[in-house]
Image (cartoon, rainbow, N blue to C red; front, top):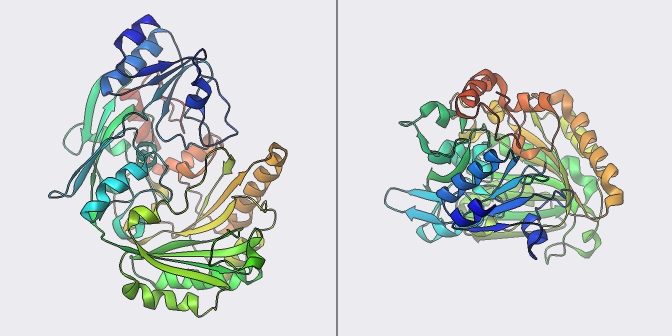
Length: 448
């Protein structure tokens, strides 16, 4: 321990420290692991020091960015956590339209830094997600239909390897490693900075509409048709959830199951109006339409920490009326009231047209069903897990079999293979080169 404390610029925390419990808390309250050391790193050199310290003592290593891993891979029992949260700087170059993002930054850090320049890049659907883990897993969000996945906008990554060396991966340097970082997750090292391409985005339009849940099939069909016929600028999601206490939500749906629609548009309200018309024609029980900065949209649905989480996903090759009916029926069993959501997200657009060979087999699926269980009472654990699995079963007849691994809990090695698809053998070769001892194994693991 003395070597680590002497060499670390940042701070180390052990169970003896008064803020240990706070430092080890992650977003999923079901995860209650007790690391032996938390290394709160401030520089890439700190990350290298922490990795060497752990390897010399045969300690399991976990890497924490945003702490949103539903599977709990941001923590380890008894091992060492490389905690990147102090490394959250974002440097924006508005001339070249690029941003250099430190490895512990969240979407909020990135969005708030780019917004004053009227620029943005694809982020997650909440602002508290860590940029690093999100991007290395592929990265799908509100902007992927317009600008591609987060990793499609990745220009370079600085990475500390299992040997404690700082390397750069880009199209010019270590290109095979760079390929693997487009969807291969945290299997190859600790990303201490990522450089992104930015896009002009001065304003967005968002419409929130709420309906009685019994109208769900009609609403989902309308959403499907609008998105399948609409431009890349159009996005959002349709979901069953507990009606929130908002001005536009009528009292009879507050705290009760409701069908909610979020329509997003990368442009002004005037430009969005023709695409909102089919939804308004349904005469929703309540609605709100607003122009707002992307940074505000991306923080509008932030999920609070401290809830119990269990998620999964199925990517669908099509969404016929039979699939709509199955999705609608699968709302049964959703815990209400709670923060749980039964979601259908559209994909396609620029993300599907990227034409790359990156290990992202799910990028061409036009739809993803995302059961997102969030609850507070441990007595509901089995119920929440069973509902999540039942949703997958309900829509499986239309599923592609691929999966975005950032969306799922620990569902076994077959699902990991499904997340990487035909790129598996090539990923294994990269893993053997950069992490042959599988030092970075607390993830959706590629075994060398």
